[in-house]
Image (cartoon, rainbow, N blue to C red):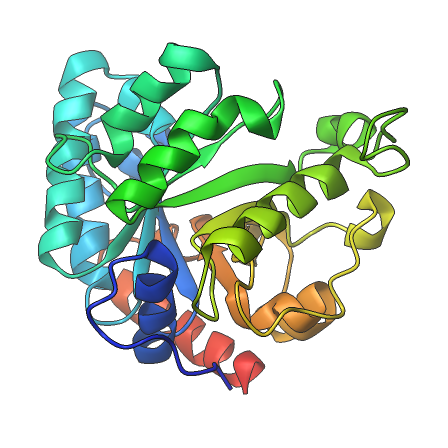
Length: 295
């Protein structure tokens, strides 16, 4: 069972995510307007088509799940018109009471990464989301301005740690040679850094800073042992790979151990591919499956 979260009124992302889990379960619906999906949905491969697609997905997800995750690249490919479309999708999601994770995978340092954070996490920004994904290739510390802004605005951060693409394994499994994290894999060092931030700043059962850990991976080979989890400040995990990529929701506990209660079960093509007339039913089935896995 999901532990009780902090009293209502807290604005921390972790608290709002915990509430969404309690009310709607752990499924997150991806909003990925691939060109082929737009065609299958009878929509043009354009900003207008991507907007219609996203707003239809939001309408189908509302009241069934607590979280949606727009893949920003599929909107960015249409330039300024695509960003206007995305702004409208995000606005619909906010109006529907859905938490939004903008899958932007930004990474930089100094004032540049700070500006990325302002674009996606500032209150009132046209692109305002509840959380974003970030890339820590220059070190988790390079993202400090984004963590600071997120803490100030009650937003969430998900740092790439162990991703499901095979090209990433050599880097993410690499062992650090020196320093205080010597002997750890890169993936483990990212996970530990984020976990320490949650332990330092969080007072709720679920932290506001998370990591991305692919559901199709053998996480032990990345140096990650998730068997035991803290009582407070649990690091949330954004887990792509369920459905189309092969991971089964029924294996949630085996995949993520003690952290399973904090996993965001990300589903995209497995529900989007059924088309606009059946997506609501597809989402409902995934919610039931995830609820059974959670127990």
